[in-house]
Length: 278
Image 1 (cartoon, rainbow, N blue to C red):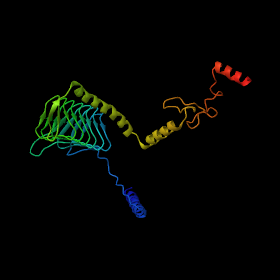
Image 2 (cartoon, rainbow, N blue to C red):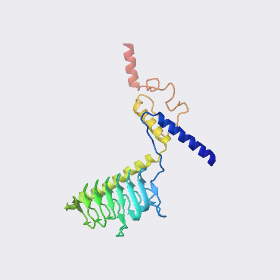
Image 3 (cartoon, rainbow, N blue to C red):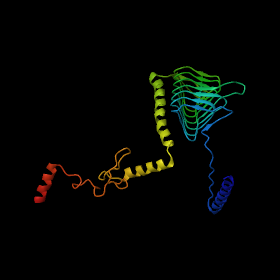
Image 4 (cartoon, rainbow, N blue to C red):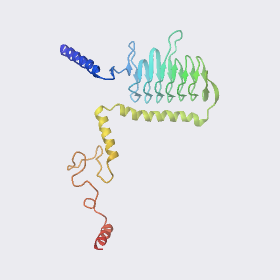
């Protein structure tokens, strides 16, 4: 089998080279194995069963992610030099980087529950308590701490060793105190975390589909866009199929809802008869 496999791989490579030589604008697609979950030095990421890890995200090494949390597309959670813990129903936005530190300072990264970290953010060797929000592009650096129900505004930098007290809004480079948050603003963080949790469930379902299911969904979508309400509708999944149905297109001879298949009410029938006599 190994010999046969080598022959086929060599043949496929030759055909690929020939195909590229025939292209006007050569395009090379390199297929690589998934790097979504990566072990590092015998440390395997521990991920809650209801957490959503996007296909293009990468979780590496000594990482714990709680139930209902989500790591979105392109994000990296790298627990190679120290541990990283993320609580429940927290959201790590697109292309965000979560890392820890070992050089000089032994600083793990701890992110609490119901935290919302926006896209392109950085959390490095820091502590983020429950119900915090780090907006897009913001950075929380070594040894810094965001206390419960606090917000760091977009593109701000929380410099190393800085602590944000609970219930405050910070902003700027370096980040400084702006004002206290209202109760409504603090509750909105939890609401945003729950919205992300619900959205992650939809993405998880779609990402789990194989190509056949995706094609079926596409065909069903096209059908719903083109099928008129005057036609019999397709059976939904789980409904009992009519034995006379042909190719899920309905029963022959019963295509339109006209009087032959959908009799008019008696008062309408009487009106039709009177019109015919006239």
